[in-house]
Image (cartoon, rainbow, N blue to C red; front, side, top):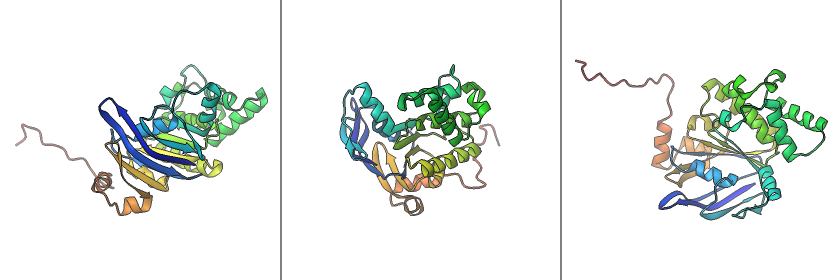
Length: 262
């Protein structure tokens, strides 16, 4: 479904992404992990069409994506292929727009139809992500962080994308809510066949949603493969350090002694 070859992004003298290649099969799920500044979000933004690559190329469903400006019809076609869900749903939703209207707007953009057809599709999408009728009538400020993220996912799915990119989509949520959203995404993948590209710094979340994992450091891929192999028997020292940084059950942070302590 997605083939990326030698993707590169340069800002002046700074190389943000260097020679990144990956594949994502139809209905598959790939996690891209690494610390802040590793280049994973820049890679995702290039694939989503939000950043122009400095080099390399990629294809969606076997169709090459050409760099450069495109017309409105082509932008809509591309949006129907790839959608992106961001870390902060509150900033990506219009604070003046009720949930139902936000999703309806996306439905009308990607699937023109009469009012009844739009209403039916909105109800279907909100039901898929577990947003009830009362929440659908609310403004974003009236919802919890997890509920807002469910709305953001529903709005992205209105395009019926072949690939859904999730950029730290659960990072700002409480652990219990993270689990709910990860379970929701697994259900969406199973019911719609949408492939997932999961961008995260949280290795603990990766086994719950991904089949494959790609590890990035300073803009380059250092390791990739099946989740069980990479997390269970990492080959690269950097991957091992990332795994060792995952908090273990019962872990407590060390407290530095006060300077004036005896």
